Image (cartoon, rainbow, N blue to C red; front, side, top):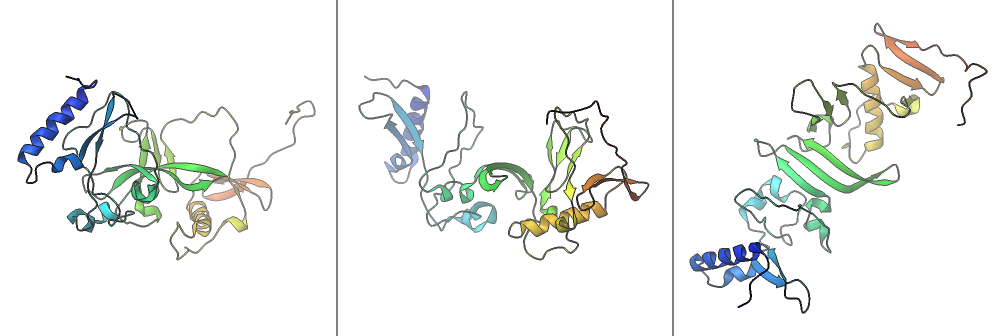
Length: 260
């Protein structure tokens, strides 16, 4: 008698036998619980769990389930009714039909809040910025668009209020100190970088103009201590007592030189 090298294989076999005894169609479970050889001529095995493609599934009627998927070619969600634990790791990989294995082919994780609509999302390669593919993380609300208010705060550091670091769509709030190990570059902003009127198109499709409007809105509402580099006039400005003022600078001393 040959023994499987892994306890999980034995566990799956027990599940298969138990489900098969109660299934309305004996042998049906073999389509969804499979133990297959690791490779050709190998004595080792691995486990595959799967669900059918069924566009009439009730959950496909809900936006949180169908958004970004095609129910006609996407398998139904496979549910594990318990805590999922592994001593190794959880991995999400692409495949030949990636757009219907991950939401739009981008989302690798989603975690829903108690309202069953708001969610934190991790995704990869939806965008390219600064000539490189981007991995993104955000907390999406219930507006279901790309406006600033559609995104909640994503907090990093701790769960203590008014501590750590908050990140939104267009703003970050650092409750803690910030230590730089390299230079700090102020925003280089000129007339071509601001747009007073809110663009009508969705921010995802009109991201350039929307970003210009964000610049205008944030500078207009900036509080004391806000700074930026006015590239049209080559000056650094700071808001003091409600007014924008020029920061006075002077040339380096003659004996100070940098190799860059």
